[in-house]
Image (cartoon, rainbow, N blue to C red):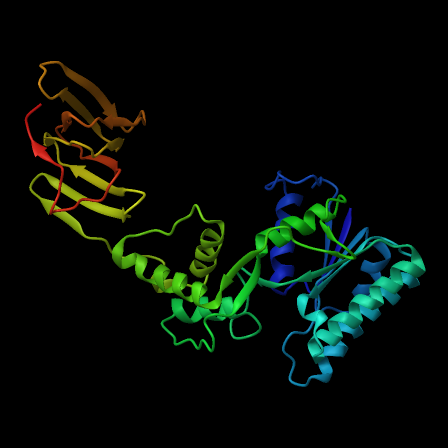
Length: 382
């Protein structure tokens, strides 16, 4: 299948092309499209116009993602949106190519402004083209699209806010109560790829991405500022909320390289170290414990707190004893056989480095962060 993507270097185009290449190379296998016979024609504003003739002659499907969003002169809206759509359909007609054509429009096509008028004109042009040629036409009226690789300070408030907050720049919010409907770029790409095999979603005469997120502008800003604070408080977002998960991934894509890593506090003593990595009120605490050769740690129990120990390097022994009994349960552990050992409430426990030369490295998860005012930790030898 030969696929023509116009606007291939734009925000949606770049994301779509990268996933099509993943399908083509066999890296992405979760689509009903065969990558073995897939060929992608990439066309953008800096391409040789002669290439468009070749691509239109041979295309089996066209994604028209080319368009103008913020020109220097408003007259360029019609030229960039309607004008190119006209050139595209005339070139297809020139070669009697009636392959399916998808066009990227906007919910603003329903508005009477220069941008909306140009988008609506492009829609009508394609609808007439479909009537004239019998070609299948898919017109998507996208709401606000957000995700990685979207240019900030252009036409996306989410991209601008992500960029500015990640880079310690000010933002301007005129009305935080404004309600926004957004679609995530990965959901857009999944929908477009589904359209290749006739799996597009229709809403009347138009097509749509089925997953739409609705949130106020103020809600977006609050989330983004909470993301910014997370390296300091060791928190992570509520990833059970789909929009929060997608916005967090988007925010991270705008981080400057000097923020790709951040320090955490290592609590060290003559036994080794203990370092918290993640601390949350509702998803527990994740830490890394390093024990020096021959060292024993622990010797305590909890009423409610549950911990999961995973030794990833070294050779050790984890021991548990139920309070009030003499039976000791032993688990010999090592980085050569990764397993989870539960620290059961009501059992005193310890962990011993059995090596004389190597450190013992253990990942530890607890179902609650440590609270020094109520530690729920009571010394008792195993």
